[in-house]
Image 1 (cartoon, one colour):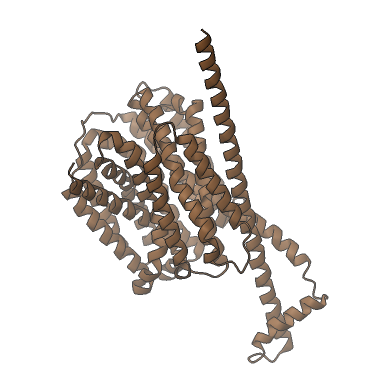
Image 2 (image 1 turned 90 degrees about the vertical axis):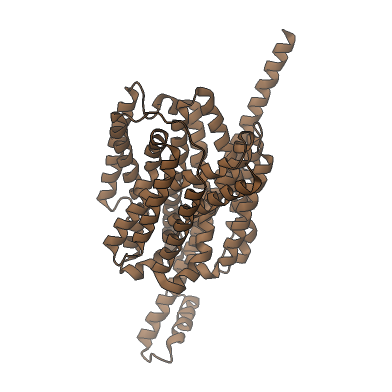
Length: 521
């Protein structure tokens, strides 16, 4: 391919992947601003995220076979057209019910976009460089959505509120629409691969994954043991997935090879990706949530997200330069080391910590995140290829499931841990705030003095002072809870690093023993 044409395909990959990433992150980033536009509470507005993720987490499973049977070009053109229509519908949102319906449709329309982002990046490289260079760059493009959403959100909201965000989605979708039609992907051979039982299995899996996604998004807000419908969703997911597994185990041509998915190698691969998503929630959920607790909004953390964006791109480029078969363990050692150091640095935060104090730690985490995923994906992909092309579908499902549901699980675990630790620290702090303590009484009087010019009743002044002191205690409890969460992530990363080093050492000893026995023979 001519370099100029290859650059055009790479640009198309960037636009499509960024469009998909922004569609997923712009709502999550602007929940507070959106709830005012549609007249909803925070919990109600979070249903927009749940509605988007419910179909999105499983639809890639169906799309892979649809693409194989009906052709890659038809798949690309109809996918981007559907996304454009979904983005246009966002312009007509005026209340919560319409917003939920449109976000559900957007979740369906966005599902093919990550696949298109991959395909356009791989298209621009020769076969020998598709996995070593194209794969890291494609994954880097997909990772850019979160920091870019934080960077552009303040300006978009200032211009036109919620509709300013949706207008950008429409614009990017239109650009992607033109690029997809102007730059066709190389045609692939078609085959009739869809069977009737595929539809039954997919509907069961989609229901199970969708119910799980909704429960993970909303569980922390409605609390896991307080809302009975959360238990119903988990029970529904268990039943549907169990029935789907039973069906697939008894099929001659299954949609998913369950026996291969349950093999130790695949379970190890899935566990590694799942652990990575949980650890990376330190940045996607932890840092942003920490600064929100301190009262900082998106426009006050712009520079931090510029640092994260640059570090992510740098990590992807470095990975593309060094990634070769056999180097995966060494790259993972470096990535886990950086994750451990970055999370441990954040665990010493205080209420005076500002974004500039986290530039180094968050850049280490962002760099490690871009460095970790491509080698893991390359290892799993090579393992699937050794077993034959029929295993590629099962492998892709493992990867996409761990990334989508794993990201939701990481945020749910991280947020739940923070809530529990905040209650713990808050109870300890409140125990020491006795009104009979002279220092506490003095602090209450100082806080109440803020309102002395507008309030003359001493009882009201004292009540306001107590309220302000309680706010400070809650803030300090939240800061301590986030520190505990950051430290937990550092410990998990360090444990994973230690396990990886032990695994590398065992493999080295086995290799030497085999080499020695072969030489003696």
